[in-house]
Image (cartoon, rainbow, N blue to C red; front, side):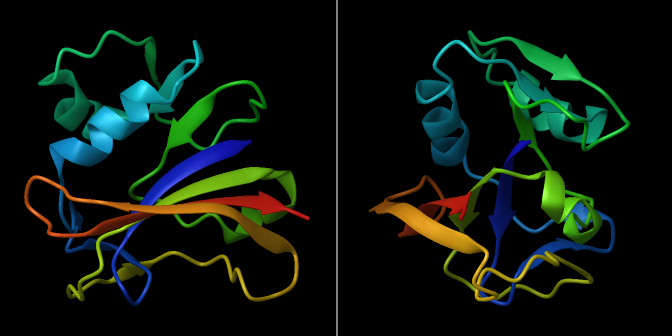
Length: 138
């Protein structure tokens, strides 16, 4: 599986059943890097993406994550630790801020199973600095 997540500095994903933040610059970066693949997400995430009218194929499913090694899955509201053995690639967009959160990302990148293969920073619409890391299973 190939996963995309957005995290704050303490690996928070959601607070009170809401996303911590959103930034059009992240969605634009995702659109630019799809390479003809589909983007899978749930209806909650689709509401944010659909207002952009993206020119990519989006598949809306509620049973995320799904075993799909070809496409990308945007996950905002589910822990993924139980699926770690099935995940090959994780693209993380870090907000570089601390937000309150009650749902945390539960995969430990320091456990020796993962390798950061690229990292870039860019300016967002609402964030001065967003850090994108592409992390592959070793």
